[in-house]
Amino acid sequence: MKRLRRPSRLPIDPYLVLLLGTVGLAALFPARGTAADVSSGASTAAIALLFFLYGARLSTREALDGLRHWRLHLTVLACTFLIFPALGLAARGLVPVVLTHPLYQGLLFLTLVPSTVQSSIAFTSIARGNVPAAICAGSFSSLVGIVATPLLAAALLGGGGGGFSGDSLVQIALQLLAPFLAGQVLRHWIGGFVARHKKVLGYVDRGSILLVVYTAFSEGVVQGVWHRVSPARLGGLLVVEAVLLAVMLLLTWYGAKALHFGREDRITIQFAGSKKSLASGLPMASVLFGAHASLAVLPLMLFHQMQLMVCAVIARRRAQDPPPERDRPVDPDPRYGRLTGDNVPS
Image (tube, rainbow, N blue to C red; front, side):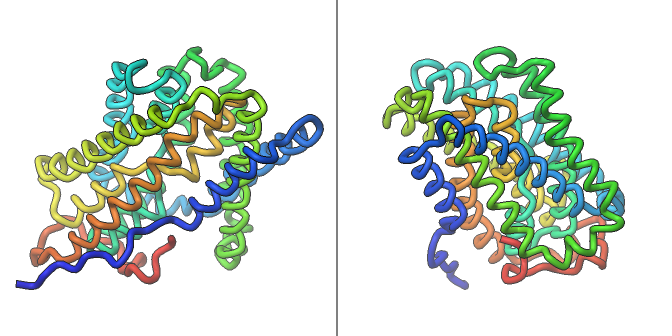
């Protein structure tokens, strides 16, 4: 019997290290006065640019082609925007014994953001799952999340410290939806440029998110919100998030089996349906929560690293499973090809 190899190392995301460094910079040198105004304005522009590039990258034709596997996509969307929020609402019973109210709001917000795209594709590929479906599922989730996340946040978080109002939804439309639609409209002319300069524009993406994080955490430091979080509360938050991730991993795997999906589709549903996007969640939180964004994004940042570490181990174990000869009812679009663990986006 072939013995399973343990991964040589767990994936500590280098970008998360940069994010934590940005948090440390904001703690030591928060933007104040005029600097805070400049930082806030630059952050707003960065968010608009970020979603403009999202729109310019998303191929409408490929997204429509992926609709033929609609059962899988609906399952992923249900996990992301129905089951996850339901578990987040159930965690309300942990306040105030385990979680403070601000930490709970951040936890609930993390359950509302869309799924990841890049890491879902990477782990699906490593585990020998349905990679084309993972590409489409992640794209659909991001697209739906631009509208669904703010609406769910307004409905579930309400006025309980999040500051949601009609003005907040207008801000979402102006800062997120309008740039995204502009990117889609202009994609015919700039899509080739965006594809050719993908690596450079990736740095723009990540730099924009770092600026958003610095601005949000600076506001939190200036207002003294970090004095409300104790090490014991952070420990409780980590335990709650570990349970949340474990429940979603089990539900997506065995739930997909109960729905009669094949092995490759079950892998795709597990990785796309159990994960949350840091790249989408951070700018959304900045718009939705304003000065409270620093605490709101903390649960998402912790969950992001946790999901990477756990899913990396699961993906490597799934890769050792002998696949059935014929397990998936729908063949992938040959234009996508088969990605490997060495050539997927990180």
